Structures are given as structure tokens and as C-alpha cells.
Amino acid sequence: MWLAYVPSMRNGRDIREDRGCAILSTLPLSDVAGIELPWLSQRRVAVIATITARQGDAPWRLRAVSVHLDNRPGRSTQAAALARLAGAHDADDIPIIIGGDLNTWAGPREDAVRQIDAVAARVRECGDAPTFRFGRHLDYLFTTLPPDVRRGCQILPEAFGSDHHPTVLRLFARNLL
Image (cartoon, rainbow, N blue to C red; front, side):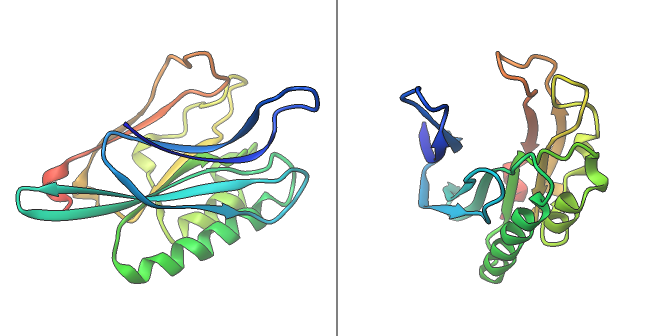
């Protein structure tokens, strides 16, 4: 397994641990970088990495981004900064997947979702079922991968000790080239 982790802040004043964003992959990660987002009420840093593999003799790459936006009004400025970065990477023709907790209490109608959706389409087959324990849909996936690569998306019923439910997107590797 490969792991890319970027801390954002301490997880409490008296606790000797931090929190941030991570990408966990069964395929090699490279070009790992932290993306500091505009400050609202807490420091937020997304992580970006390139996943590289081979399909037969042909190499393929995929860029992955993990993000956790602030839960205060103004998170659309953080989403806009992330969208600008994703748009800048679009020029190199490496497909991108952006996933994370956008803290969108009003759901996909929020500007934060629309900002990212403008550069990498929201994976609508994931649906709008609640991803947060209080019945809200806060977690999203976005991608520039074509629809023929996607083989379904689901929000898992088990939260595995988190207050969020995982969102799983299955990809058909043969169509990635």
C-alpha cells in the first residue's frame, strides 16, 4: 500500500496528534503535494498525488485529490481555489479524481459543489443519500474520467467508526487507456 498524508492542524489543544487529508492506494503514488486552501476558521490542506500503473505494455496515470473543506460559510472560496488548481492540471491530460468532505449542509446545490463540478464533473451515480450521521450529504467525488470507465458508485452502509459513510467508485481499468 502507498500512503500520502498531509496534516492540516492539531486535533485539539492538549492532544499530541494532528488531522489532515490522505490518499491510500494499492498502486504507487508519486508527485505528492499539499495544497493549502484559503483560511476560514481553521487551516485546511488538501493532498494531491499521481497514481501510476501499467496495463499490459501501456502505462497510465491518474491524479487523485483528497480534500476536507471548512464547515463554516465561505467554504466556496476553498472550493474555488481547489477548482483553479484542478483546472491548471487539466492541461496535462492526466485524468483527475477529487474526493472529500465538502461540509455542504445544503447539499449539491451549494456553491462549493458547483465550483469543483465546473472543472471535474460530480459523479452523479453516487447519488445524494446521506454520507454523514445526521442525515446530510457532505461527501462527494468528482472526476474527468469518461463515463465508460466508471462501473458504479455506492455509499456504504457501514461507517467503520467514523461519522461519515465511505463513498466507493469502481473503475474499469481496461477503459482507462
